[in-house]
Structure formats: C-alpha cells, structure tokens
Length: 225
Image (tube, rainbow, N blue to C red):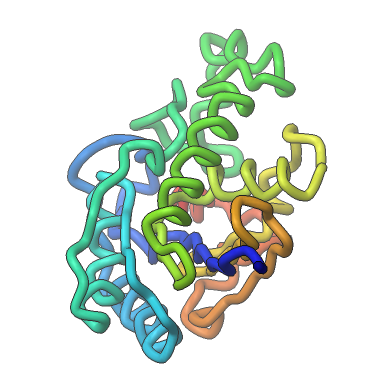
C-alpha cells in the first residue's frame, strides 16, 4: 500500500506597512499594507482550486492577515502555531538601511562576531527544529490533502536550506523567498520527496525586495522580514 501524499505550502506574508523602515521582527502592531493585502488575495486566488484542508499561521499580525483570505476561500478555520514565528533578532526596532542603519554604531558591532550561529539572533539550528515540527504537524493534520502555513522569510529559507542540504549561514540578499511566495514541500507519508518554489504575486513585489536586488539607500530590506 502506497503512503499518503500530502502537500504543505509555506507562504511568506505580504508587504507590511512600515513607513519608518525598521526591522520589526517579532514586534506587535505591524500589519499588511494595502499592497500587502493585494498580495494576500493573490495567494488565495492562486490556491483557490487546491485541495486545502488546513490553514495555519504565525501569531504575528502580518502572517495572520496573509492567511485569512486563503482560509476564507476554503471555508476553513485559521489556526495559529507559535513555531512559525519570525526569528528573534537583537536589532528589532532599529533601522537597517544602507549607510543609515544600526550597523553604523560601534556599540552594535559586538553582535556580529559569529555569522554562522548567528550571534545577532535565534540560532539557525533552533529555527530548523521548530519549523520542521510545525511543518510535520501541518502535514499530519492535512494527511492526504494540502496544508498552508504562513510564516516569515528567514525561518522559511532556513528550513528549506536544511532540507536541500545547504549550509545554513548565507547572504540574506540571495534568499529565494520573496514576499507572498510559496515554498512547497511534498511528502509521501512522513518522507519529504520534493521542494518547489513559486511567486504568484511577483508582479506586485517592489523591485528592491526581490531576491538578488541591489541595496537602495533609504529602502531597507528589513521591510519584508
């Protein structure tokens, strides 16, 4: 007898209203912008014909608001899983632009001593562990069907890197995880058999937030964390 095939779509939230350009991290009060809501609707449209039976999101407002249209379109209750939350970061609440951010202050340089862990925030290995558990739980709840998990760029990229056997430390500009993107994990039973990536809202994403874009002074990539 063949194992049940289950698909887990891990969605990064849409654009956030963040006029001050701070690294908002796990802070409360950061909601989707008008453009971000359009991105969330686009994701829901993209998944409208899929066999979605479970929708779950990080507790942060931007993730909840991105997940709501998906849950509504499938007539499902939106669940919350703290394991999908953004990575902790000591620079939360600070600006992080090119030439005008927190790294100009020598007082912050002590946090940059170990990029492999990293020393400025939650350990990569801890992010992998919690994200793997969250995905496994979503897989089990949607067994034989499809689940949607809404999370944040860094934890999504880190768990994907783990599954694809890449090193966890990396250049943040090279993450393939743009706003409102889907990183899709397909399982046969408990075995992961494939990873795919799609960008249903790519045309809505500001150019400076796309993977590989050159930094722009005053346009912090922290917006889309």
